[in-house]
Image (cartoon, rainbow, N blue to C red; front, top):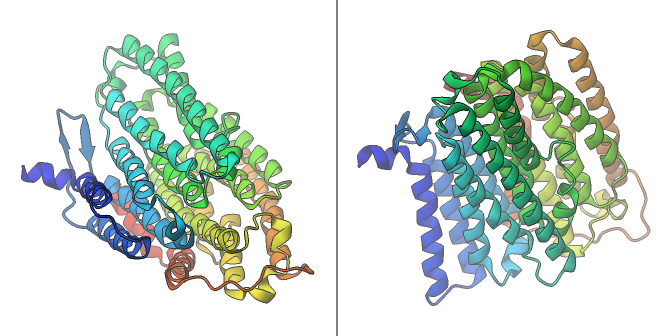
Length: 465
């Protein structure tokens, strides 16, 4: 029992919080002004608990496993959920279904925890569904907006399609290897045609969840239609969780197929970076802009994964940590502006600095980090990804990735120019974000600066491998 409680600590804490919210909902209930701070405290406790009593081990006949690195990955996701609860305070306080929203979010987070710790394909599939279905409901939380329902419909249809592909791949893999255990599959792989076909289906399912081109077409519409709290969760937490299990699957389970998946990664990374950047250039809606920006960022993550060594794992986990701070800071500013002024177009951000200097600087810092401009943490994150990807000697591959970084500078700085330099006859009025939102933005800003400059963060992640 002690081993069970220790190894499944993260999942149990999230489950307890979900049941607490359920009891509050079916009881007398609480006002949002009282309930939201309570939820934020519980989410902070959930994040802090991830750093205590961690140990390596397996449960349920190797169906569930955990390690120090997995515990740290779960802590990154918990931090992201906590920051979302702070940054979207203005919208959450007005929500008529606050407990339901967090129950859905935490259910999705619970699914992601099980997904990262899954030890066979069946548990992986079930946990992926638990991580996906609640997010579709979250996307539909702006009930009075038609585009929110449209976004949720596209989300659920794309998820259903990718789940079908995943199940077909699992069935083929089981037929080709005779097992669904992550520990046993590598010993059965011999690069047969059926195994490669099964792997392609599994890879495609991952590509849908990560918005890898050409499986990205749902992303921008879902991001635009969803409330920013749901969009932030999709962009950061969901992508981070899928990235963690994706790299574990490639490095541990499908290592014998390295020659196959390396070329797939290289081709898709280049296409994803190029398409993501080109489409981001022409976006006017800030959420669609950040959607294509996140697609381009996935391309850089694939560059790091292609290294196929411990440096790749370290670089990817380090980058996801930075990505949490950077992307959530951008979405946090967008959430404050959208909730207080109703404006979401980049042209409407012109002259923002004159009326809202704090929000302007936080947005600029986030965009600088996403663009990889020193001394922000995003620069170090992308540097380590490119270094890891270049370890195989594919310098043309790294050159293309570096050129895409230059292209991304244009559209990130386009927003910064609109905020600081362009004039606007009707600028956004002065906004006074709540103390909780300010604290969340300051935490993100501090993370963007300090994570890159404090070398021990990277060294700590490397020590967990």
